[in-house]
Length: 336
Image 1 (cartoon, rainbow, N blue to C red):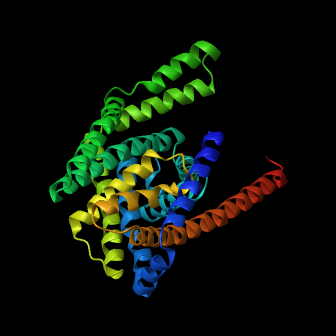
Image 2 (cartoon, rainbow, N blue to C red):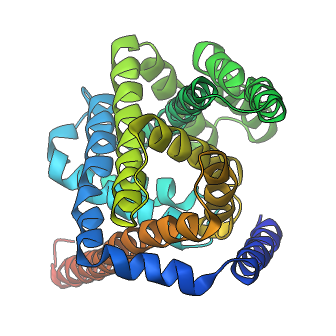
């Protein structure tokens, strides 16, 4: 995985450099200057991305022992930390989920149920991204594209069809952890590791039986993804190149789909920019404006990501000091 991350980062940087070399950078900077301070509206707007994800996570955790100790505000913060880790750190978009489990464990929630909620949420995200991608392709086809572009879009739908099919199969017949449990049981016997895997399997199966919760979480994730289309629409309007809503949704959906496919490239370096340039050309947006939109997105990504990572670092320090203090008091207690 580490090798894949290094290779992905190198490819992403190379792609970004190639785009920068072929683009008119002064024109891109001129577009950013034309937008001015209103572009910073995208920073608080990002709340409408994190909030639906936090609400969906809360729905999945409903009924879990101690879930009330992790209220919506706390889940919102953990969601920003997860996003910051996945976006800004070289963790192949999986490290955020691991840290999310750790942060909810601080509130006393059981590990199996919390881990199950993250796994199920990731599976539902694959569904939501695919549906969003299909919506974008349909909107783009309605706008009228040439025969070559039409064939390419239909081929992309066909090529990515296994994603929702496999995800649906896992959600319906997800016995992966049961198989892992059986393997560990035969290999090492009944120990804490195999029992932990069995508990995780039971938690996932229990969560997958809550069909209404799964549907609500998926819809909320779709709302979060749609909020990103406003960023495209708003930025292009500020840059003096207004785009209608269908075009903004199509551009955002296709870009998000490519970023999720290229998850091994840290922060989607180069991938986001190339996607906006490639699909933007279909909508009459030149490369410089597409790169300016990407810069606007990177701005709010970095602001939220850095703030989330700093807050996480501070909270880790507080947690470590509290544990040391508790350990010191335990040593000083004669009854201990």
